[in-house]
Image 1 (tube, helix red, strand yellow):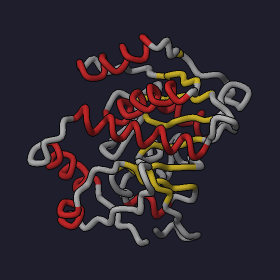
Image 2 (cartoon, rainbow, N blue to C red; image 1 turned 45 degrees about the horizontal axis):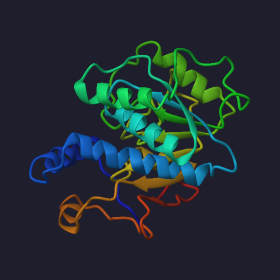
Image 3 (tube, rainbow, N blue to C red; image 1 turned 90 degrees about the vertical axis):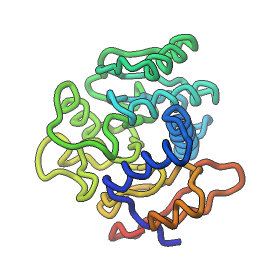
Length: 239
């Protein structure tokens, strides 16, 4: 099945439509996104292969998706740890962190140097999503550099952090050599996926046929109760 990509502008418009005429709340969309991310982790790292997951969160919605995913991972039997250096003070994000504290999910204040498989079995990159633009401020350049050099498998959520949503990896800076092994596109792939070479999943099983058609999207073939579908890309990055 050939999927179609969704530009950053159209992704923002779609989210706005879902929260207006679609009657979804931000909480609902974040919950569905985080659930999809947690299922992608399970496909990449079954519990019998490892349980230690580092969730690196940024201050925006992408970070919120990571917080939700961490809660689900805890209930599945994983051992998530949260790296969240720029915590969002919005009430929604405060509730998500409170839920994790209640489950005694640890929040770490720094990353191991080097970041190796002796500490974690998988890393979730939930730092920047489709709305990212502009320069990257500390501590995130150092974090992205660590992700680029780590031997730990990385799953990027919606976009490898620092990548341009339309054009892919930057030509310079800490993300120049950052190529995570897996990506989960939320709702629909963004144009950067054409430059991606790893395992690719699509998550966010809530689009109706009418909305998908209006945005020129193809809903992937989700199986059974799955909230995520793996969608191969060929050697040239085409869907």
